[in-house]
Length: 433
Ligand code: GUN
Ligand code: ZN
Image (cartoon, rainbow, N blue to C red; front, side):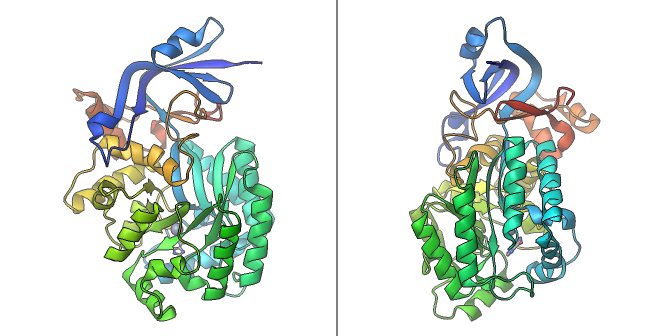
């Protein structure tokens, strides 16, 4: 049966990139507007939505709320759900002491399924409808996430995390098994429903040159898949990469030399870049992913969002759960704002909302399917209550324009602000379910 739903409220709309053009010319909130959902898609927005609604439509009145695309988290580690917010370490110690022991537990497929379900339920609670996630070295951890995403209708990118050195026994594969397992997984999952496979070398310190070359070859054989990894997160890590790869020009070159640099590549963190790396990433059109709560939590540094994005670098936004300290893209936008302030340049709410939706969609190469509310896009929608708690509500009451009404929720909001979540045309949160 052809079910149609009309959502009415303030509607977030994009016409371009608010970093390379003025935000005022590219991001709009249409007040008291409407979105029409037909099956799994958005079939009309604004006056067209009301005109086409018809008498059989189910009306969802969100007057005063913000109807926006579901958040897209462009870099996360679902296996780290149960060890998020672990105290007091910097990157390499944090990996060895907290992360690797927890990732070892996903050796058990039943535990992987438990964590995958828990993780996706948490992100949906926070209004996130799509994620690009690392898994563990265990192929069953990839199946667990894609199966859980498929059960919820979510557009998911993920891949087996590959490591063949500098990781404990039990968390190491080999160059050959990483190639074989990744190939079998991408054959099973890439383009299966809403799943996209991401070839996933964890980062160059945990892969031998042979493994990087094998995964580069695999990407060359399957160029429509994504590739996700980490780049230049901490100064100590960069020095370690220099020791491990003395013949390479810089950290990025340890990927580039092995066929692991391309427009469908996603490079998490990318904080401490050389001029060559900055130019090369932009020229290639690779995606860099800003992970602000992680960068402060693990003490990594202050990403140059404004400098990179203004120069045309594709940038997505991410929690980096569980190096990041939150599942919430609202909290992630707040941290983005705070880091930009520490760098001396405020980022506007319009830019933050674009980054957390269309910006992430574009680095995932899914910008024609998710990340915006327009005709033909998937009905992946988040509805935000802009006065969700007494603290936010009293500030919201003072707002004299729409951006001033939205910004308190970005800075102070949490899962209580998420009034409804729609995935693929189905309401998964709010409305009494
Ligand atoms: N670098 C390599 N692995 C990881 C990880 O799991 N989290 C973060 N934040 N950085 C990494
Ligand atoms: Zn990460």
